[in-house]
Image (cartoon, rainbow, N blue to C red; front, side):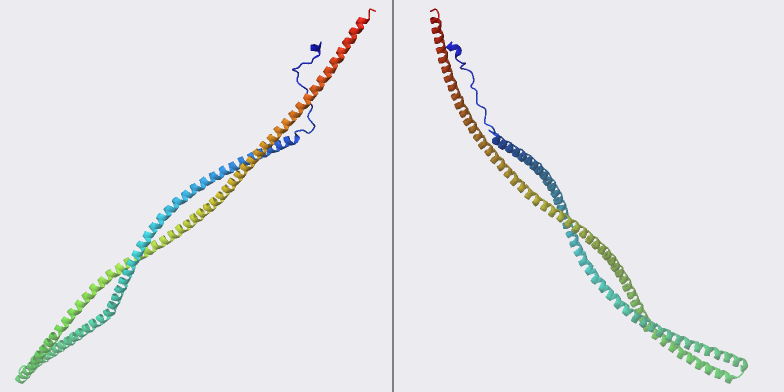
Length: 355
């Protein structure tokens, strides 16, 4: 009976119900910590996406910078070519200056030749006028002699026709003819003198013709020089046009260089801003990491606190259950004692009943 009345030793003890509100603050703290961790995770994800976008932007800017560097190298090569062209232009300007000086010298020679040409023309005209005057004078004298001879011959013919028989008139005619012959000889002497005076005039004329030929040669040479000067002027105009084109090209290249420099400066500013943003992002990420570490440490400490609290609760529950078990065992012992006493009383009553 005792074995029947004894409760099952393997039965689990009934634990007391937890106190109201027990574990609510810890759950709220854990939930808030989880929410904060989730928000930090989302923020870190967003920061990672932003960092990736900034890295893509940085790669694109680096590519743009490489393109700009290539353009800068090409521009430097263009500047070197422009420098060579400028050096060639300086050489051409020096040659143009030398040709301009030569042109001025040729122009001065041409001016002097033109100044001398009127004097030569006047001298030639004077000599020719003198020759023409002397020729006119000699021709006039010959004409006068011939006219007088014709008149004398006519008179002689008339007188010969009229006074053919008169000897005196013949003698007079002979005397007059002798005078005319003498006058003719005098005219021949005059003509010889005129002809002899023509010799230096002819020499002068030849010298004048030589000077004219020299002047013509000088004129042709000056024409050639003028043609060369005109060609130089045309070349100078072409060079001026080339210089203008080079100036326009240089202005365009300088404008493009300014644009490229502004672009490079903008890229540098954007890179510096991107570097600052990356630094801020790094600091934010490091701060988020520190916050996450702090949260994890706090969660760990809270977990330790919760575990300790649960251990205390379990110990208290065990103590309460042990006390309850002891109380139940005490009540069982009391009940057993009562049952034993009741059995004894029942047996005593059974023995006393036959009497």
